[in-house]
Image (cartoon, rainbow, N blue to C red):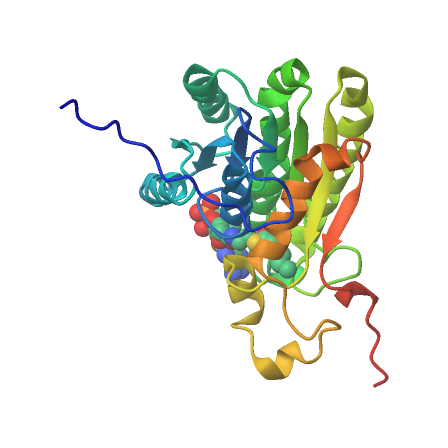
Length: 271
Ligand code: HXC
């Protein structure tokens, strides 16, 4: 008897969207090896897409790609690249095209962060975050625009909420994220005629992320009670927002910033 062909496990989406809305689509995600971007990648793969995840640490990326493929039944490849260097990013894009033949969706998510007052920031410290976040986004856009034009695809840029008001010890990140918001809006306007959309997801306090661990420490029930919805956000909250923005349900939404912060930005306390 002929051996039974291996059939990859088909993950069942738990979202409110149809399971196969991204069937045949390809995602290219910088920063996809961990945290929010990994969660977004998994959610998009669960709806049928293949993916490339890009980052600096090959061990972590390789493990993440394996786990994402196993969890979703879709193909995920790791590509080591430093978004600060356009050449390595172009190589990651070339590998994606060689493997999958197309790119439909791009998440610009690679980011760096640490707490430091502006008086304690060296020129190199400021430049490092600007280069990872902003220049990295620029390089990712430049390397992928021709492919998104070909598929009439879409960008999601991962920004933050901290620069809409002044957040102490975050001058470098605030400047970088404000620039990312601006880049996304320009891409939406310039590339709209080519059928390409560009939006920003601005996460608030999201538990289980390196960013919040660095900035705030681990979440606690006492702290959660101060948030309007009674909790910090979850990676899944950002992932669901990404599924929506890439889906046909968002086909006339471009150039926007979507906060995923549970209304925290609006909160004013009496004391
Ligand atoms: C002051 C610091 C510092 C700190 C680094 N530097 N940490 N300055 N206070 N805590 C300075 C260094 O002294 C150096 O300047 C310069 O920054 C570059 O540091 P390197 O370590 O050489 O850079 P690199 O190895 O490229 O690391 C980049 C990094 C690192 C950003 C510094 O933390 C990193 O790679 N992080 C990636 C992971 C991460 O942070 N993810 C979370 C993103 S979350 P000198 O002058 O000494 O040469 C996010 C959203 C936040 O962005 C929103 C939450 C609400």
